[in-house]
Length: 160
Image (cartoon, rainbow, N blue to C red):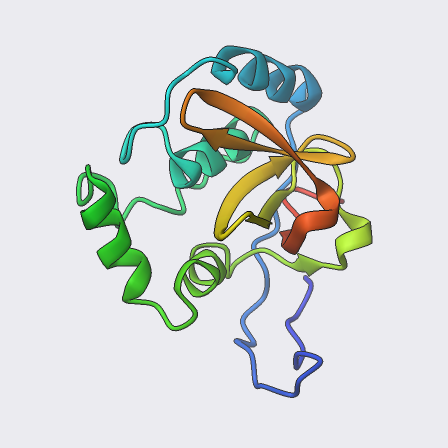
């Protein structure tokens, strides 16, 4: 199993092994189907937001790990979601790191289709899924695609 090491800045990191998971045999079709089905789905906190989308993306490639189970049903409004995000050091970045702590962080240039990505999108940080040279993220009226150049952190989901 992969082990965590110290970060480049030298902060100690959790030393428990990363979650060893494999993508399903038909993961590309699953991811494509998810992307197609969510293109026009309107953003709604707690039902169709960047957190729920990340879990759906993981499931679409065959990884059934609900990283947001502790938050389900606890937020339905921007105010409620903002309160959860603000409770983490570094806000959205801290929350994303906490949710995906069981998965290895990759170099930005190593991102592959199906990996979960935290991107800087204007003034916001949002989670999305890598779909090649871009990241599928939820906008107000459906999916929008942000250049992978705006990635802050990438988590490898189901790599060999």
